[in-house]
Image (cartoon, one colour):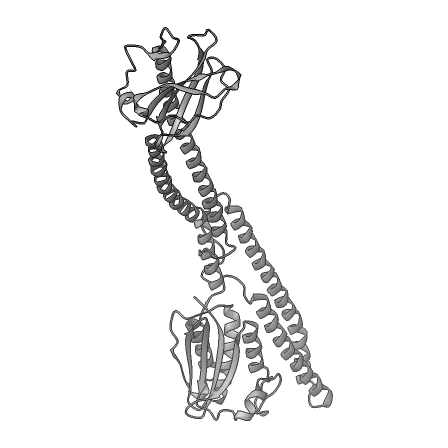
Amino acid sequence: MSARPGSLRLRLLAVTLATLVVALAGAHAWLAGLFRDHVLGQFDQALSQQLDQLAARLEFDAQGRPVIGPRGMSDPRWEQPYSGLYWQVERLPAGGAARRSMLRSRSLWDAELAMPVDALADGAVHRHDVAGPRGEPLRTAERSLQAGEPADARWRLIVAGDLRDTAAAIERFNGVLALSLLGLGVLLALAALAQVAVGLAPLRTMQQGLQRVRAGRDQRLAGRFPAEVQPLVDEFNGVLERHAQSVERARAQAGNLAHALKTPLAILGQAARGAGPGALPTLVDEQVQVAERQLQWHLARARAAATQRMPGQRTLVLPVATDLLRTMDRLHADRHLDLGADDVPAALAFAGEAQDLQEMLGNLLDNACRSARTRVCVRATRVGPLLHIAVEDDGPGIAPDQRAAVLQRGVRLDESRAGSGLGLAIVLDLARQYGGDLALDATASGGLCARLTLPAAD
């Protein structure tokens, strides 16, 4: 079942893949955000510990100037120039005066942290992202405290750490996460394809069953289907069954009508033929024959119309041809004709009713046997979806300018022979009911070749 525009397969895949893309993109953003928050939280926690250590080591001399106690700061990076870990102590004068850097780590060398103006409450910790002494991104933690001389002196304690390693770790994690989610997305997409294929497999089975029904191999959808599909299959089989019952009722009614009319027509015909010579008996006999011909005509049309395109119709050609040739051999036994169907493949089948094929092929064979000198043969082949049946005889044939006329109702070229003149017309009408045709042509020996085209069954 191909994924054409508007197909159920394409819709399911499109919805599934779109949902998958949105879900994976959302998962990437969410997980990346969680990791970033976690890493920055750990970074901020480390800065807070360093800030506490700075506050614990901060002392004031006799003049009230800040100094770091003799134990110093424990991390050796404080002493390494531009190590990425810095601290700084600033004086916060009252009255909005400019801040002054009073003390800073050796790692800053001769640089100074350019901190934004901030109103700090005592004990509160604020965090900022600033540029470092070499332009690198720094994250800072700051707090204010009141100590030293004079008694109202306020100090701003700042520690800062380089964010580049942390940003690189976040970037590496995001890359690995993206590749992982991409691989997961590919696997889920393949799983979605498999799920759609497995989920729609019953529809493929149903389609194949419908093709078998249309080709005449089955008369109903066979097999068990999932619970969601089985009611549809049951309803379709019910429609097929009701259609078959309607056809049977129509055929039964047509048969009843035929039997109801045949009896009074036969009685009238016998009465007319037994009444002796005269205009009235002759007229009655002629009209009875006309009525019988019309009855035969309309019954054939009604049967073909009722059964054409009916699902499950399949009739093998060779058995029908063999039976008809055997019958024609008995009917025309006095002519000693050579009848054969050697060129009919055993597997060749007609997508229609056996009775209709018998009607068409019987009329063609009867006409051929009446005209043939020594031989009548049946040939059949299949070309694509069509079945081609040829009935050939070695008789005098029909002139090209008369072939169209003999296919009309009631036309007989030889009025001396008994017949209704409806045989070829019935064949043509039945063939067209099935979407086929009938054509007359000449054989190599000058006889007649009646070529019948009908739908073929697989």
